[in-house]
Image (cartoon, rainbow, N blue to C red; front, top):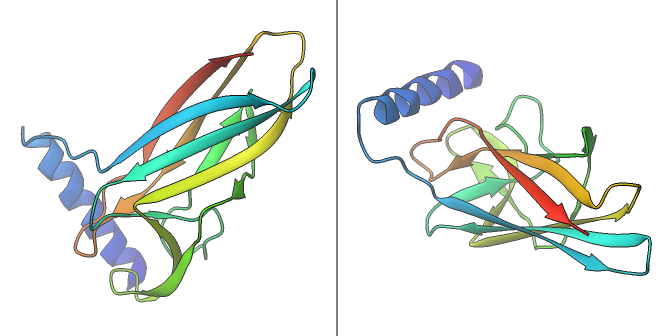
Length: 144
């Protein structure tokens, strides 16, 4: 039942955006590098989340919403979740989920290799308690 509900919500969201309506973008991302030393850098991804919308944790039950995930230089990497995660029952997915409201900060430590650039992307899903948007991918490229 949960999977059917998620599929129906996904189809409705796709239909809404395909109907020529204004695209909803409730989550915006900012990426930056902070040097730790000459080789190590802290990669920080900050999500600003619109009121009433949520962003899901990287650590979700497979039957729930699509978790946030990160690719850095071609490899999937788990980031530290620095913001306080809210764990509660979600009426859309009918299960307990871990989510962020207003702002979510993720970080990881990476090493500078031969390249002066780090590339990657974040994949995430967002919902507002009544509807969910299809998963979105936001790419990034940062110079050391």
